[in-house]
Image 1: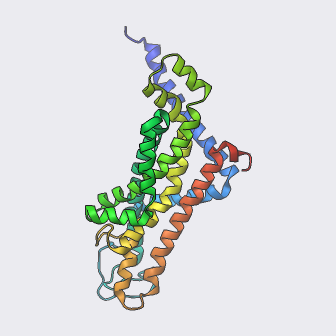
Image 2: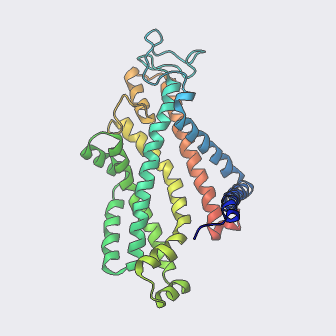
Length: 305
């Protein structure tokens, strides 16, 4: 059967109305978030600005991150180099901007990979229970017994230097948190009446997990991912500072802090201040944005916003 001419003309209009409705719903959601939590909305704008800066780093950076000006080595901030230069004449502002790209790539990749894997593990562990749950929790407790930085450093040293290695190393430290939180949510959800009804109607385990339980885990997952981005940035910077992160000359905030130690016994203040401020603002922005998302999505805190 072929569509008539009016039906073919109506289909694009229906698609446009659906898209317009989705945009309106997203706009209303953002407006509600900004009205209920203006401070978190402000830090959300800061996060958006940092992400735009990282994506469009070539457009914002005044110089190349690896370009050396041997006539302006270890120079303090001036009209040509707003953040000064390092010991081989590289522009600090440009390296901070390009460093946001590497640091955020590692942090976002590690958090998405680690939190997602942990959430799926927690979903299966909480749903099936029994011996699988007991063994899973002992493995998670073993991972949590190590400090995050020590565990990430050991994995990075074992696997070798590289951006992929750093992502995997940080992701493994995020798995236990996602597993524990989502497991606790699943343990309460699987006893709900609608889940029991689906089980009574003969729904498969996969359908019950994906259709009836997993959608209710989206809110805690978003809160976990947002708040853990700040932790991942700190771990990545610490690994770069210790020399087991992304290898030079790739600019990252941690590598810049490590390079400042090569400038002399007392590092120039601008080589320490500006990467440190970038790390501080980014971590603070992600943490406060995560707090705002938690306040909006958590029903127990919704009335207090």
